[in-house]
Length: 569
Image 1: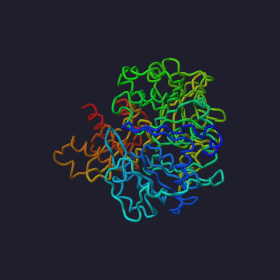
Image 2 (image 1 turned 45 degrees about the vertical axis):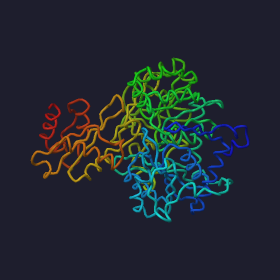
Image 3 (image 1 turned 120 degrees about the vertical axis):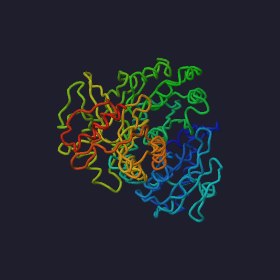
Image 4 (image 1 turned 30 degrees about the horizontal axis):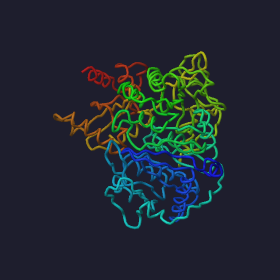
């Protein structure tokens, strides 16, 4: 922020905020600086210092960005946890990061209802021994449980604090934040990003991929609890002195044209959203965006997963009115910033392709042996050379970092993204999705092992396997295969009732985004002789209805036959 305070941007709007009920706020760069400094001083009064971890479990309000910036200002490492995650998921992330402070709020508005945040997690906070204080922002005014001494109201804590707080100087490799992403082992990975490299690439890519100009109003719809919210809602736009629009609620509340109305009212020029959202808008019909002029838009972007050509064309035609270039961006939590994307006006686009790597990014598509794939031959997406915003480690688990990202191409020292891809005859990249047991649902990466762990923790479940199949709306739909415990499966259990019970259980344990779309019951699951569940066969079954490939390691072939017959039924 400081770089803007001695320029004409001092009085420029930094954040245009709109709450779901319709309330609005505007913060200039000067006002944002004041609030960040006040909060930074308040955190210091609680004993927060360089290297401490501060958990942030909040909704989409300006104070969430202020919290991130206040932490970075004093050298604390922030750990933002998506507000849609359950209490148990929050607890696990606070425990792993050894968080000293938690910043949260009483509630947030969603679909017209004040949903509890602090109240929903109050009961588990005593299970985090490192947690010294919980600071609660009053947003909805709903009744909120508070623990004496430990829990403090945000407004009381910042009251009377100095609005001056010198930005500390830190080494470029000082940890800026931890952000947890799902892993294939069931335990979320704490992706660690450092200060200098991450901010460099976030700033560069925001400016050039979005062709950012001083007069732009930039609208990224991502929740700040995900990496897109970190890089392209918070740090990237603010470092570039942009005016960003931030929205609290559901994009279709109270009417399906909420976003299009906001774009017109705030004269948004750059719009960045996920293919899942675009497909949802398509299904709602053209009539809703057509109610609004959308003439202020000059650039559109997509993020989170590959966009299908049909959605790309609809986005370009209905939202962009055939005059807005589309930047289809590929990157990951681990990469920190955009890696493959067209530069608007410089790189010709193809619907569904992320086009080419950005300057300085050495990406390629290779075979398992590390040989370059031929044109249009599917292979593994790798990055062959370090880049500024790359993850530095998995927090507290450097061995997992090496094994997960660098063991597949250890000899070459390449980073393996975990994605499959192909390059066409022009060298354009077409991302094909995950090749491991991490799936992408509505732009959110979820570990199937974490969902399986939640299912098996239910008293009626003996075993589970979760796979994904392509879904036109969400990108991937989650299909859970479940074996019930013998005492439950004997007799005539009410399977539809158990299905709903298990879906609700997963929502409680992890969050609604992990709720399985389907639950199928099986007496046994296909396993190797060593006892490993052959998820590949299940994945093929839900995708194509049949199984192929090597089944020589299968222990019991009759299991597959039973699953096939149940599929046909």
